[in-house]
Length: 349
Image (cartoon, rainbow, N blue to C red; front, side, top):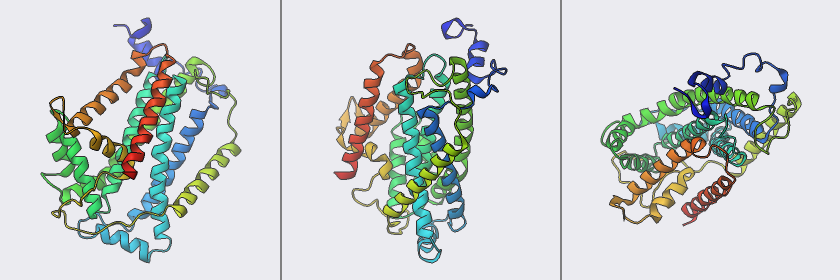
């Protein structure tokens, strides 16, 4: 069986994983890509390290139980020195991390590096971005306030709209038919262990694929965004890390974490107007703007199906656009503008 482009399956996989490039990947010319994408990837890795360290410190005080979760965060703010600042760094670090992941995908789309050897890099980037959003969502549930419980209910409702698998996914997320101790336990396990571990593994695979792709196509990337094959100096990397930390500290001081809300039992009704956490404001806006019935599906159901189709198209993009058409840049810019517009609508209206 032959892979696309006339290559055998073994050769196709080898060129994309580096298995056929053992004599080249250790060449010092290929160690520094020197591109915008490479700098963004470095920034994402640094942001993840900050998230991991701040999360580990928060875990020393957080109590993952329905009775103590809310109070443990309130106590952290009040009794632990710089506790509120630590929570702000963790919260704004998550914002920065997901934003950088989206920026990496956008740069790859502009450079059309998803085709001609970059297929696995593109797919791994999509998975990493999805895992980052999952970490963000599960983290928004952990305060176990009424607002956090509303986030869990809304996300469970959207999962339930997925055709065929919806009921099972909803029950798996909630740990039953409604919120309870299992919901918080699962959100905690996903947030601190399962999703970060999966992100590290997929991120490492993505780095290997990217390295192999750069070596296969020559110095730098195939896009016009590459700045050359010069090896990055340690001083520049340190400067990037310092700038990132200063930006994160500034965001933490200017945008402290919002109050954790009002504590409540899981059987209390969802507050009126509650929706997903603000990182999913675009999704909340999309659901609100969709008619109650569309093509025989409920409004949320049609949104979930449409998003699923878009994700499938994004995953198949390297094979649908093998030559890297310039029109994809227009599509990417339109998608980014729609995302920003819907987010603004969800936050302001």
